[in-house]
Length: 97
Image 1 (cartoon, helix red, strand yellow):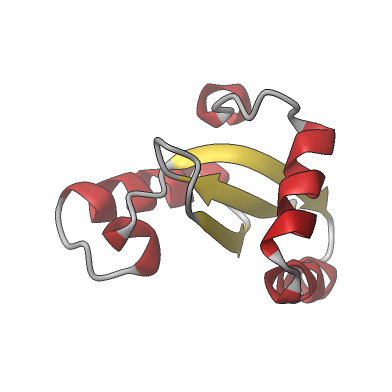
Image 2: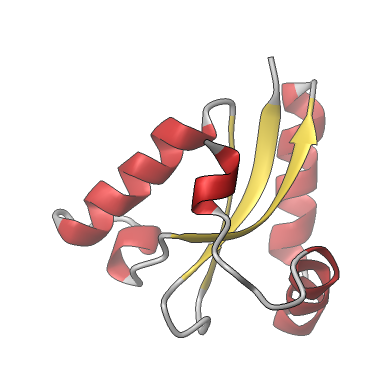
């Protein structure tokens, strides 16, 4: 089983959401649902539904540790991480299905 650390953003690329999952398709659907309906979650409130970055791990503990590490970073360092992986910050939602 694969575990993904992923970063979502909103339409204007102003807010970042960092998460970890073992089913990216299901998780993206949940974020999309939250943004349209409940808006109770962070990602839903800020409409973070656009996948711009991900890393794949075979171990959940490693993925969780990486998620926590990235969450502690300053915004500039997160931006650099995304830009190194996805220079134009294009939406990758369809690439992970």
